Amino acid sequence: MMKMITKQDESLISKKMVDCARDIDMCLYNCLTDYMDKDFMNDALSLYLSKDGAFANGLHIDNYNTNSSVYQIYEGFRYMVMAGLDKTSKHDMFSVIINKNFNVLYNRAEIIDNKWNPNVESTKDFAHGSLFENTEENRCLFGYGPTAALLGYTLRFCAPTKAYYKKALKMIDIMLKDFYQMDKLTKYEFIGFNSFLNSLRYENILVDDQKKIEEKLIKLAKENVSLEFDDPSKILPLDCALYLNDDELKSLIDKQLDYIVDSRAHHGLWEHKGGWGYNKYPEEDTAMMKWIGAESANNYFYLKKFGRVE
Image (tube, rainbow, N blue to C red; front, side, top):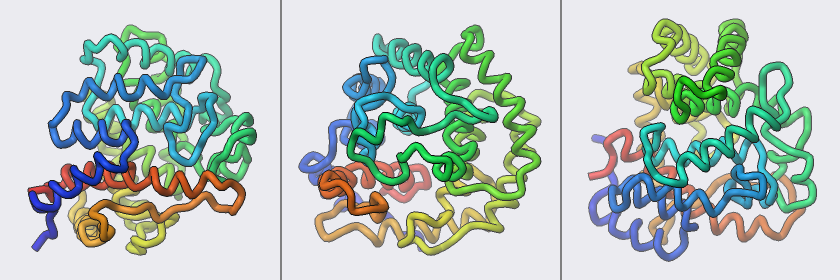
């Protein structure tokens, strides 16, 4: 029998989220529970816009940089998708957020070999986790991950007449040629290509490629998936198979969902199992507290998606 979040559990989660979650994570949770309209996410994200208009200012908890970066833009759009936003939004801030973030992404962000560099050099001046060091090692670790997701988000959030949309299609053509030749993916590439596939389905575009992408992802996921749920560095089922239609992988996702239901802390929410990778900044302690709300909102998204909330 599937393990569930009961109405009593949800009541406690809601109370504790109010006590400790950041506004952005509270907003996502409220959108997921239908307590708030999804357009409220535009207002919540507007607080994280930097001086160039793109996302920054600690939107990703492990990066305190006040300057925008590709990864922060990816993080902002990820929140928008989880809340259910798309190009039909009529909210005043939606067009501002989309235009300013895509301007930075397509006109200013560093891109090498058809991949955006998720990180920026200015991060060294702020508290941050090692994942956000602007190094070649991290660039390889991210690979096509954020790029694949962001190209999908462009299709979801932009009208086909937009220059950003047309540029995305050109980049997608190159990316897919590379993808079909790849024989392994990093954790972040699995996440990114799953997100990209979801965007293609949502927009009903590149239908022939959808099947080819899914077949390849299923093959690689089965070769690389791990059930070491306590280790966030591993490629877990929800990383590599979130949007894949395969019975074997779905059974592994069910195991991870059972684990998530069982792993709530004594206070009723979920705690983050990651870290910054070094003992360099005292802000990491504060970040771990912020992660409680973010981890809980993310887990609630997964549990609701797969019917684990009563």
